[in-house]
Length: 295
Image: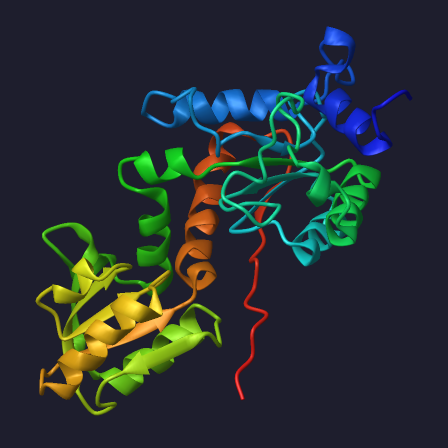
């Protein structure tokens, strides 16, 4: 197969670019490209063609779809569970191959997984990609555009999971006035409701909490709230700001949750949004799950 590896060839065929000819789907079968076209049509916002995130990461538009799985991140366990459920199209919010752009390399085939030589030599990459190809998996990412939806699909999903829509302040998806509780009880509620063990808390566990805000950066920590819930926070600034605030006597706290715990509910919301206009095949949300454990 000359200089093309088996994996590269399979990806190019899936992407419909092998020999410059479009891949032919089985007659009458819904294809991954048709699913993506319907998503673009129903988003309610213009599609940004310059996105490097919201593209096919494994396979391509010509792959026939037996079922659709929506999820936060396409880890190996998630792919295996999707295969077991008979869902061969995975719509993911975050990367498949561990970097924001899924390891883009110059000269890689359009629409396929793009990976440089070092990545291709990694046995974990090889194992993951080979498993996906053997099981006719196609992966397409939606990141930029789900955040641009009105309302933001990821934030809406978090609100629905927490059942906090009725507590929003002025319709803001990131600010709430909740029934009085304590910082410790709120942390337990988040851990249980978001099904995560990756929860860290700064502040007095008995602190009374009513005003809650969501953030992810140092600037968000300065919000007027009893408690800030944060994900993707950096320890050297965000964590330390809250620590100094608490040590200075401020009556506030912060609960740090994982990236997955924050955004996975948004892909559950995306499955609900998708089902009315993709009716030919099953559409199912599968949680990426929190694999971490604490001592």
